[in-house]
Length: 136
Picture 1 (cartoon, rainbow, N blue to C red):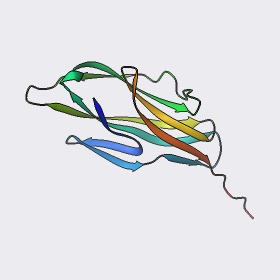
Picture 2 (picture 1 turned 60 degrees about the horizontal axis):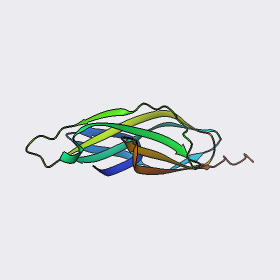
Picture 3 (picture 1 turned 90 degrees about the vertical axis):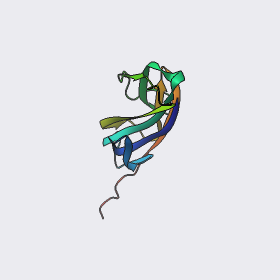
Picture 4 (picture 1 turned 45 degrees about the horizontal axis):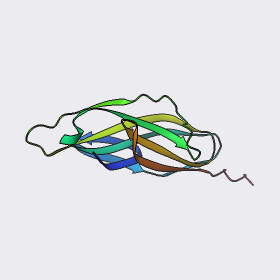
């Protein structure tokens, strides 16, 4: 299996097997802490070969710099892979949307992407505290 794309974005869609991304980002600027990000998505494009046929478990986990989860117990996604006889590989896109993500403090975070409990990609994310200027 090969993860071609792993990105955090404002939104994503799949149309005619094409992954469409809107607003890929790696930094959240927060005027106050804890920070709440209203909406985002993790978008993946994964290529499977015949060696990958079978059932897999896709797991996503937002973790802080200490490796602690900020959203424990996020359910895994079951992925069944079966290649048609006339294909050498199969590519699938996955989009998982999140609303009202909570970041307790500023700092480094990441999205850990796992297949069958093996880390396959890490998407970095920086949460910056950017207080609003005092009105003068």
